[in-house]
Image 1 (cartoon, one colour):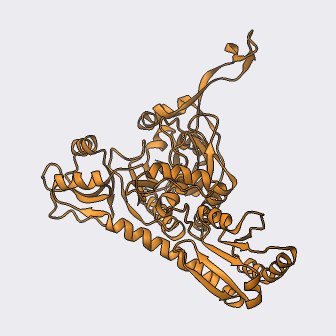
Image 2 (cartoon, one colour):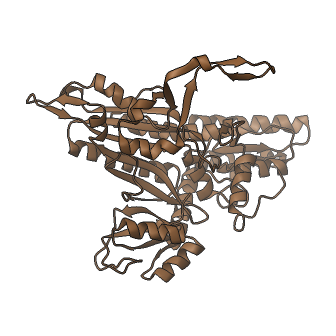
Image 3 (cartoon, one colour):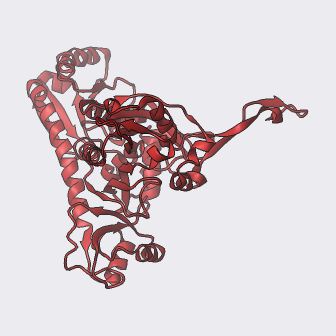
Length: 488
């Protein structure tokens, strides 16, 4: 654990890979592009999941589960949807293997399926095939269903948590009686995503709408939250889609209105994934490893007992009992490290894992009635009485949560640039950062800039001010003010 991480400034990618591994978050699976999420990483995801699950349940949504396998014909029903996912689909063609003459296994040709099956890349099609059964009248609406599941998208270039062939996520799929209700739902969920990112992950985000070339395949409009990572690249952290009536048309989902008319249903879908774990690492991590926001940290306080013999060990244990009970009663997730590793090793290990607070207690502290409290965000140490610690720990955790967010926001704002010439635009993009600028609304302009600089329009932000702006590329009057960046 004493080996230094790759330099975060000069080898950000290597630093990220090492942090994921050495913090015990995940490992590579045996199939290329897959990920094994280790217990500590899964606890982190679980805390994110539980936070958002509580939010959506509080707004009337319920959880369900839909099949992993989707008939191939379902994807063909919505042309834009199938085109968007065609290159990422894993396809099941046979159902059996058999032994061959060389003591290996081969596909049994007699088990070929009549219709090939797609392994779920997203669930709109299978869910809307069920909604056709479930929706008959206005009384069945709105239908507000979410599922926590895995999906498979066959990626060529993968990176743990950020882009893997299989990942975990939630996908909400809702049905509504009117276009207005669907639009309200789309934006309400986007606001919940903003709250999840900023209030729990301490990751500041821009909210806005995607351009038509960047929207979800099959959506009328895609809204997103976009975050800046520590290397000044953008990460799309969540998306909420207004699907209009596209999937209702594809699956003939109609309902009887109050005045006995038959109308098509209006739809939304929305999702965040284990990519959010990557966002936390990339936003807050430093040269010592992770720095986890307390609200989602698997362990909020780690206690390092220091002793040389059994007598000291017992004294420290007895001394810690009331402190542990107090933290447990306060709902604080605390862990005592009684392993036989050296204190220095433990300090490095728990710093790597990003635990927000570390408490050190040795024989001298027991004699004085003190504890040593070290903050992971700043490294600051303080000496508190045991009674003061009970009172101060919740406040310190809140302070760390707020501080991480403010640090990330300051970093983002300092690296978000407003420019008026294409030369300055290219310099900023090459160096790294976000650019707010005018765009003429042309897909050709958008594509040319992407081809020349590898930067994409991350979103048209809700707080755009296009009046008086000129397009950064064409020089024509701007239709929108947009945010450009290179992205993960």
